[in-house]
Image (cartoon, rainbow, N blue to C red; front, side, top):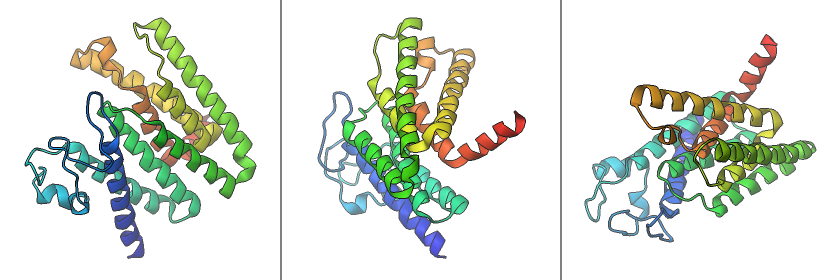
Length: 254
């Protein structure tokens, strides 16, 4: 009973924080507010307007102030965050390390939806994730911090190389510094082995999704691939949940 109550409370808190962070993150040619707001009328949302599930269905998916349709993302974030907390707790139980990983996963889910809506990943969010990773290692297992720091450097190198290859091999002309920062954060928190698992799933997932979009949905090559930061965030979630299982399976077949 306590576990179920913990899942509900933590899941709801994560959902509120994620939606609030996304709402406060500016979109290109959009306005920014210091508090969560309706994207149509810019009215400040009260706490009762942000309750997961209840607020969305109570108002039939519309703003209670201007009756404009709210983004479906609000409901999807609620579902993803509560599911993430439930799955993680029931799989790994309650622990300090598990709680830190859940917080990191919450941020990664937020990044997925931020990228989907083409919002800017501000440095304050990435800096908070970096500080969380440093606290995690220094407080829980300081002996592994040198390895985590080296993994962060390799994450920077891998994503920088990926961007350079993308620039020379395609018509892409921009160097995505945000992707490099995210690669560094994943390397820092996940460590060397799980960081490589995340990078593998990001590259493999991008190849599969891009091929399917080109072959079956007739999308142009430059539109077929999802944002790599989105793939990296999703792959980070996979590594947090199943990374060790993937490594064990890989070792068993080698």
